[in-house]
Image 1 (tube, one colour):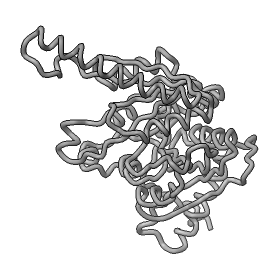
Image 2 (cartoon, rainbow, N blue to C red; image 1 turned 180 degrees about the vertical axis):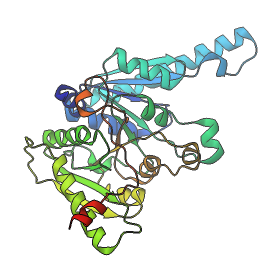
Image 3 (tube, rainbow, N blue to C red; image 1 turned 45 degrees about the horizontal axis):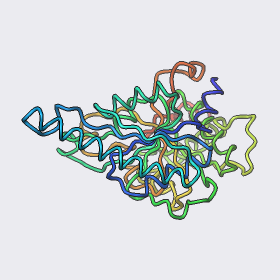
Length: 326
């Protein structure tokens, strides 16, 4: 187990705040809040589109427009950075040119970034296909945790308060132990209440098998809590039945100081277009920030070379063998 990596993710010293300059003030407040929790340095990054995406037919006019745009972006970022500085957070404004997902990925690696914060878009259908989403590209492409601020998250009540409840949702896929350790370490560090959640697909199960499945899920959740963990509050284990996105969004809490941790399986194109992917739906409805971790094929012992996996799906606990044995 790469405990040092888990600690880095839980207590980040370098946070990259990606902004398109259109999210409004709430994203800045959340970035400041998270930076102050771990005394992290913030890289405030805006990626300007590549020149071939900018309008302008005359080469001289296009260059003038590009310089004017860059000057505006730089001034805007510097103004935002001053707000971080006033709150005691070291902040470096950075302007890059190119495709956001590519430039941010390179910066994450070159500057040893421990966490990325980005706002979500909520487009669906054709606009989702044409415009894409930087947040979704980062979820899929980055090996560090990505914290997404959705449309319903509001930082006011969380300002200057400790990190509250940490909800970790899991389907018990390979890598769940590593992800659970991340959630547990984060909860220990901030003396937060750790809640472990599994959403059970009980469709077609008999009543007896439902009870067996719930019991098996409770046992698996207990096994995910590291034995060496010393939590101020006893971890809570929840097993629910139904639609995962609805249940997780509901359990994600009405308190802005909560934090939800879940995975980001690469979606099928149909789910991507319709916006039905669990991560997308949860982010859209959650009232608290959502941290996603890129799934990989790595086992827990391989965490040194690849990030942990938390694959969240409408899952089923297999209980037929258990039922047969009884």
